Length: 148
Image (cartoon, rainbow, N blue to C red; front, side, top):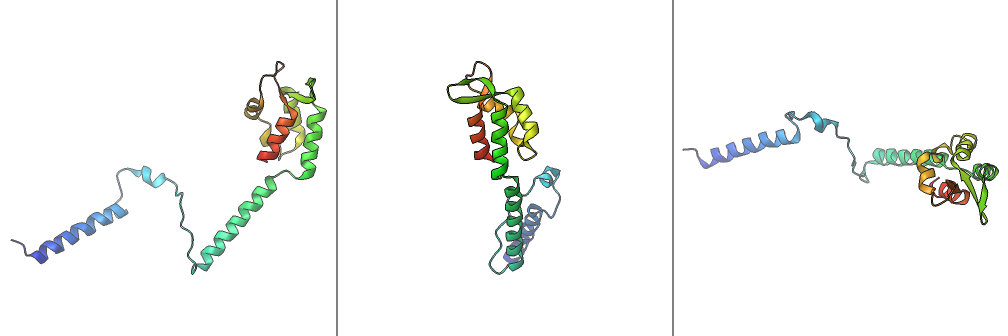
């Protein structure tokens, strides 16, 4: 028979072995786990100054990139001018409308920042019960202002 100390030692050995395997000491047969991207990073502690600075800098760069994607006032005015110029008759009351063909023409002329808004998906999203298959210029412009 084994003594109590030997049993505890054996138990600790087995625990350590299985713990190491669980932690990744031994490669698993299923390699798909290595392809799962990391999606959570803990926030740096107060004493991790370098990590805090890195986080602040990366956040600032991200916000700068996002702000460059936004349309400025001049670009919005140009977009409104192009939409108004390419409206498709007849108007519905006071509301100017645009068909898909003219919508694409405006998309070509509007510039690279606006290109993301001139897709079939967005046109279809804003298309309602117009008998001529058009969307409201005002609704589209408001959509651009909300999303961009």
